[in-house]
Amino acid sequence: MRSLFSNRECRQCVDCDQQSPLFKLLSDDELKLLGEVRYKVHFKPGEIIFKQGTSCFNILSIRSGFVKIYLEDETNRNFTIKISGTDELIGKTNIFLDYRHHYSVAALTDVEVCFMDAIAFKKVIFGNQKFGEFYAKSWGENNVLMWSRMLSVAHKQMNGKIADILLYLSNDVFKNKKLESFITSKLIVEMTGVAKDNVVRTLTKLHNEKVIRFLKDEITILDLDKLEEISITG
Image (cartoon, rainbow, N blue to C red; front, side, top):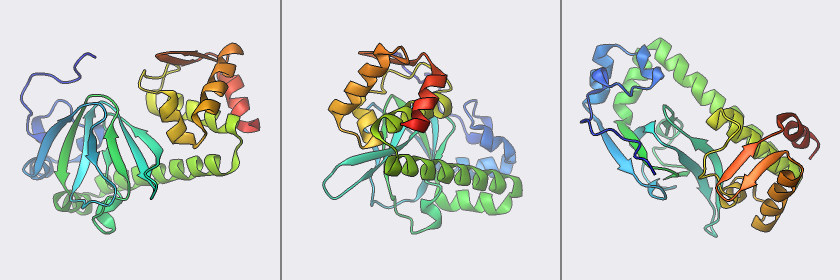
């Protein structure tokens, strides 16, 4: 895989050329405050960035790559609730509750993450109304997405669940009908709760019906209208 990272040294937040659009709302002084207490880390595919139940003292800003956000139950089964990519912030809820991670995060690709001190971040939120409003909006949008995902898993039939996930990945994550190669049948199992054999069987059926192209390293949506119909009717 081609490296996602440049060889340049990490700059201070105020001079960063990989700055999230959200931080355009901050003044130089606010950016300097965050920059003084942040650090950058590279993760390889499969590495755990943080684990459910551990202490939370940072907000994470994804500078490049993709991660999965997932829940773990007492039997060590995973349920992936979200795929996050560049410019997204992770940990928004945790720093306002009990400073504990209520989900785990792992790298799906090479990932570069900035860890920002939670106390400094909250200071900036409370001191900058526009930044705070944008942050709250992002928090709300994430919650709406989670509720929609939970409703799909709880009430839809197998075909509807799988169609929902393909639409979510295409429309909300990648903004592309061709999904990234790390979207495997195993990951779709984690996102739907459907058994792997049934996931593969359904994807193969959709491939044969020319709704999607399902190859070893590729899932591409060919008939968006049909997939949306399946999402509704199951």
